[in-house]
Image (cartoon, rainbow, N blue to C red; front, side, top):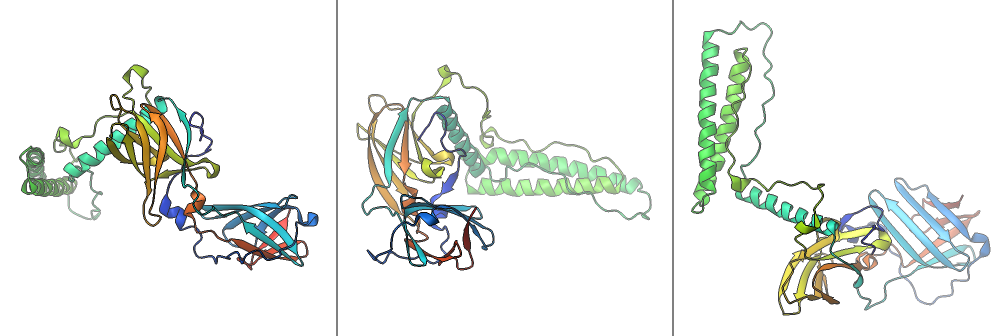
Length: 372
């Protein structure tokens, strides 16, 4: 897995469950064993393209050495297969290569030194956690918006002093609700605050929104410009730290750490939601999970290095593997995952009827592979 310049072409944070669900509606043909399937026919060698199946793209490459490459795309889901092919009579048989029982799901790949890309991703994860914590602490922390303009009848009488007075009263009420919401929010984040204070803050914020809407409506009825009276003061605990995801990070300011990147470069995938436990040489453990881009991080530990990573895939896969690695005190370890093992294969054996030079697949009888 090339970590310097990505071999991926695009970065995909693909949830494992989505891989497992690929094409489950299609029938699966099992390999019946060592039946005679014939030999590769030079007259059929070539590149075939599927037609006749809506919203589906597929290609089949039959090679002279008896190997095949097969690809199918349906919507946002892609699947590939390789294996052996042969002709017997008026049929072509594809026998897909399948992972061998006992094959490791994860394998150690290359290792590189800590760099600015890793530093940026480490900080992005910290920013994401800070936003989640702020949202959890201050669920009422939503920016105020102006309500949609009222539709007033064209023949209504001109507004008078009563409407103007009502608008003034509504403004005063909105300012009082704004200030009350500010006080309630501050009380809700105090060290001694409990559920009652948080509920009071949510109620005060709801009252503020209602008062603001009433003020806007009253001003429009009075043909007055809607004034900007500001919003409730947001406590500092409710504000995530400022971030600049694109600014250069001088090396002297790097926090540094230990990182893994989990992916399958052969299929241009990186996996999110993979559980990762970093096991240090002193017995300490740090738990994490891969996020977008397949990254997971652990802190530096003085006098200790990570010697194992325990990787876990969530339901419905539910597989765990302990992966020994060379001691890593700082830097980035790439980990390859064989995503073929996570899929229910579309076929172990596919049979195609030969009709006038075209190939008709048994799993898609309306489809037709033709050479171009």
